[in-house]
Length: 168
Image (tube, one colour):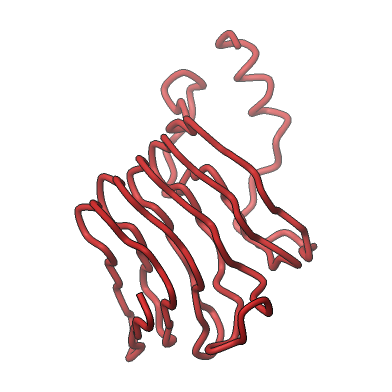
């Protein structure tokens, strides 16, 4: 795309801070590679704090399983954790996702009570395999594989939340 194409595309987009209505999507068995930083200078716009991820998901899902994100400049996944803790195998909505060779493997949000991230694999990410920022709820990481990242997990809590790692 040329610079004029990018400007016209940006002009036609509605920018909002609210979470879009919808959800219950099925996002299974996809590959995203080489997601890049947004070209703020090329489109003459002001940088924001938005994370540009291979899978940048802001709604609830019916299924988010067996996806791979690689080569993403910021994060492989950004999504909300939505599964209850200690569900039986096969009952998880989010499971089996993998992130490798990104800056962060996954930036996950927990905006409800005591939820679980299940069977997430993150390896060869430049920073953390799993990161959570300004959380105030508990999160459990179960059956995760975190290998050869600078940090396995990097959790920052704004309140009194805790991280439990089980069977990983």
